[in-house]
Image 1 (cartoon, rainbow, N blue to C red):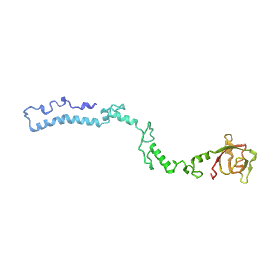
Image 2 (image 1 turned 45 degrees about the vertical axis):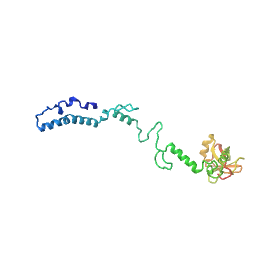
Image 3 (image 1 turned 30 degrees about the vertical axis):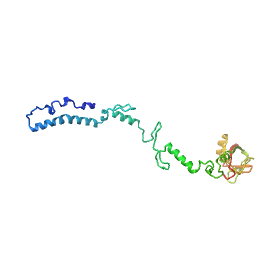
Image 4 (image 1 turned 90 degrees about the vertical axis):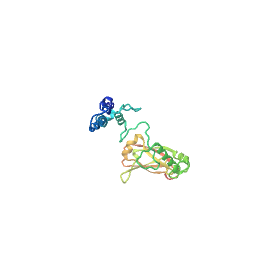
Length: 248
């Protein structure tokens, strides 16, 4: 039912208002009082109560017409349903566009959201507090090998790749049941260099099954160990990295 059906029209109170009484009424005082109350009791109260009951009902919101720019609903109820359908769930919401949130203080340590402004502010503080803004600070070299970041980067970039062939027949069985093989290599240098060791792609399976690993590096030779004697030759790639003359 539309809300405008509850409007009080002249036909509703016709003959019920004070104007309907004769100019010189010949009625009792009680009848006169009843005449004064009749309009309110028989017209206003029923109309008002019917309006309240309709608004308070389950479809009351649908009876209130409302148009909001950007939304298709034409009633308060339709608009509420539209909002409910579009709202993000509390658990794992899938937000789109550019959602925003309050930016926490840089020393915050809570479960609140970190905005991009917060991340950038923390990064700026980290850079300034650690001295990373100074290109000569030793913070770029945590082990104190070089105080100039450019020289440190240049030294760190100096490396070469070596390929070592571990032949099948050169493994020597040790007393503990493991195997050892020493390979002669002119590039083997125990001082000022570190080595990153990994099997060549074609030897990956054999390397892993045999449990091969590199032991000590001596001048001119590398020593490798294996928990099981490999059944085939194994190629090993080694990256030789310069460590600026100090312990890596």
